[in-house]
Image (cartoon, rainbow, N blue to C red; front, top):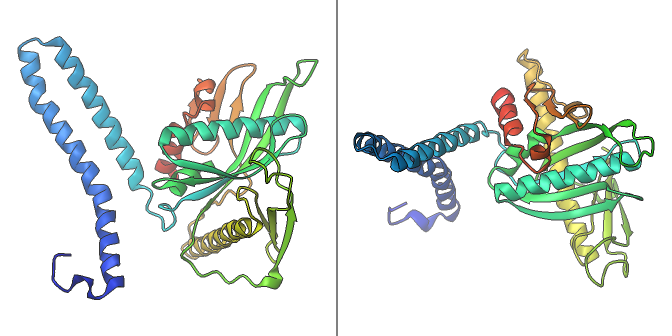
Length: 325
């Protein structure tokens, strides 16, 4: 990058800068962790020698933080897929069961918003359809942050809730389902979508959003006829902007579908069976008669269900990445 003619080929220069930044994303955190570990290693014997208990406690706390940051960096090393570094869409859909499932979808929406906030990522609601009595029928988030898709893809699948229903006067236990779909945002790929292959429906946006809501048919639903993929957007003020958002979402879903089909074909050729769990149940959340969250893929169990519902999901995400990469 220091050679005189570095910028003569703009594309090559940008590629070099991108490669350099990708390396820095690993080397800088590692160097910082190593330096903090070295500082503790040098200071701890001195603190113990002079019986400075307060300093020893501070150093041990620093060592625990070093261990956690190193663990997080190790987990991030597993995010080596072509799409893992992308931003993503996360979509929640209530299953069969009416109000119960809509309420469960709303609880999951809150859980993911808390988790995303803890990660320091940016979140935007692209589309939302409220339930008739409570909760939501569906909601789509656009999530922006480092390796957002790589982390969020572990959440794709069916989530099952067991609890005593607040909507049942007889206080009976109910089982509810909601599905989570995660799609990487890919704007820099060529996906051919013919106009005759899509059906576009417009409707009035619902929910909060200012004076334009319920005034004009600004919301857009787009259906890709060959695959049956449906996307919708009502977050933008104009129909044109919502069309563009829908096209980006549709391209992303079609590209992801193409990538997964290619990977599945390669794994079959290699004799390796790799499950792509589009509709399988991935996690159970039990509120009664005991409290437990259990991931059916990694077998990880957490008893503090309230912490999980408040966005404490890293243990499940990390366990998935360690086992399935």
